[in-house]
Amino acid sequence: MDWFVGDDYSLGRLLVTEGLAAIYLVAFVAARNQFRPLVGSDGMLPIPRFLRAVTFGRSPSIFHFHYSDRFFEAICWTGAGLSLAALLGLTQVIPVAACMLVWFALWVLYLSIVNVSQIWYSFGWESLLLEAGFLAIFLGNASVGPPILVLLVLRWLLFRLEFGAGLIKMRGDRCWKDLTCLYYHHETQPMPGPLSWYFHRLPKPLHKVEVLGNHFAQLVVPFGLFAPQPVAAVAATIMIVTQLWLVASGNFSWLNWTTIVLGLSVIPDSVYEKVLPFDVPAADASAPIPFVVLVIAVTALVVVLSYWPIRNMVSHGQRMNASFNKWHFVNTYGAFGSITRVRYEVIVEGTSDAHASVHSVWKEYGFKGKPGDVNRRPRQFAPYHLRLDWLFWFTAISPGYAEPWFRGFVERLLRNDRDTLKLLQYNPFPEEPPKHVRARMYRYEFTTWKERRETGAWWKRQPV
Image (cartoon, rainbow, N blue to C red):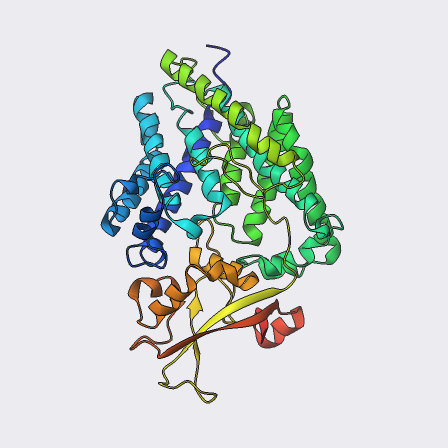
């Protein structure tokens, strides 16, 4: 089995499985904390209504067989428990078949959530986690050698993720070609982080260097993943460093962290041994025949299904994030094909006046992640995903994104719905609900260095 086992990747495999387990844990906990007001039986986009309109064949999910809010919560806690077991290393000491069943269960449970949660789960990192999580089923554990075929497939996933993102930029907004996109991006990105103000205020020549570095990392470096070592490890390290830069400059759920985890799989044990204060245990060179057969089969499946993302990448009409099958397997990826130049925010307000007038006092609702109070510094939430806040960013760009859910959101504010209010940072009507709710559009800009010193504010805004 020498051809099958990557005997220099035992630690890389462990880091991938541990990293994916941590991301699964965050994903299941976030689902449990937010599902009731979003997709619960009394949510803005109720799952039971969706299930009546969509068949299992179109959207596979165990919820087609039974749904209740209590059952959904049980699924979330089960997924969180299995994720925690994998994170604590328990899957490393059980038989490989049992280990595979744990990872298969994680994939089925999260697929079931994604496929029925509609627009709230329409982000590329959902498909990314499902694809990486499916491949983790076939990575095995300490009882078998690291399968080199699956490690190569993980590199292919990382290549599609980065190269697809690079292509969509070059085919999209011209600011990526003239190197000016980061004049705007740190300010207008969906959810700025605590350091985004400082990134935005970097000198413009440095912003151009950032863009050049991005093009290099996404359009050139990915080809190095398939080069001999140590070139592949250097390529992966460059990707990891650029992803850490993105982690520091914004909030992109678990997109960056999943990319980092995939990059860790490329670095061989011989490199880790040079930087870690302990010796890396030698990998087991054995692999049972059934395990080998399954790995070969899933590798062949990836090869066949890769036709669609390859066709998409070479197409002039490249789609940015798309799944070509209902299982979210072998997808195409991309990000920020266009950059917003101006930041708009939808600010939600309420009043206790029975008859709203020009003299009414309107109080603003506070959100956890999206900008509101100009004096509140942006927070770091990633890899935790604030789904309502993200949809508000899209709504500010195009009201069509709010069509399915915004009316339901307002109705819940008008009755101080407890679950909906848990999604918010601040409710200005703690005693009794408002009589009226309205939404106003504002233009937001980061303050200058001078304005920041004089006022202490992070943002300035004007009504639109």
